[in-house]
Image (cartoon, rainbow, N blue to C red; front, side, top):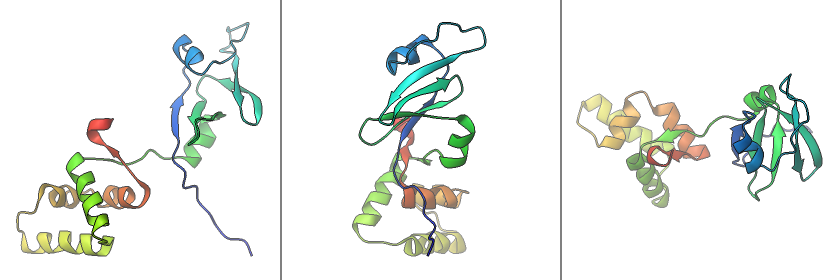
Length: 147
């Protein structure tokens, strides 16, 4: 029976701009002719591959790198949600206390119904960030100050 899966590993990636800085950083082989933009070479665990300006260079959990065509990258990956530091601390605390999303959204809903002034975290969630909060809770996140 076929089942449906999604990737759960987190990668770091940056779009290749053809700069000498990136060529040196990833130790890419330089092309001889650059009139048409040219292709560069990148060494991966699976062998040697061409990479062009606009492609993405991904770094995996073990430091391995590989090239991904821009259209494939955009269909496969999405940037981690960016949340305020206070919200990230609350997520850690709520998870440590075994709270569920249903409980958190229940608290948010009660504050909205009673129009009470909630904490900064609850106000952030209430102000149109419910989807971002849920993605951060489920998939991980980047803290605003770390960006």
